[in-house]
Length: 131
Image (cartoon, rainbow, N blue to C red; front, side, top):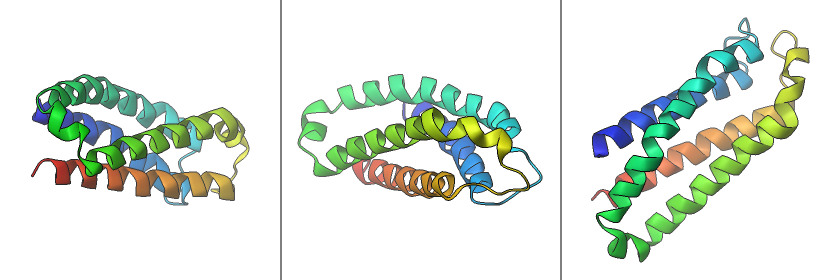
């Protein structure tokens, strides 16, 4: 289960980081909508691995995890990450075709920074829970 969970993390976070780095100004020659069409489906596929494997991993040690503050922080960070992604796709991404020559709006860059920080923190919490 742990291996499936880690593979899901690789897919989700790897694709999200590539997208976030583009929003922050790297690879300006790649249009944001084109990159989104290519990498974001991989993030969704990662979720298909992460959610069931995470639930199964939790079920093996539910009592201890339920009282672990690191687990609570991880769950809170996951919620923040989901809200951040939802906010971006609901309110910001629709204007992406208008972003010419890498001129990404500041709000999109802020969402990208939030995404990177949150996913690094989620992974850190997950590693702390494993030991």
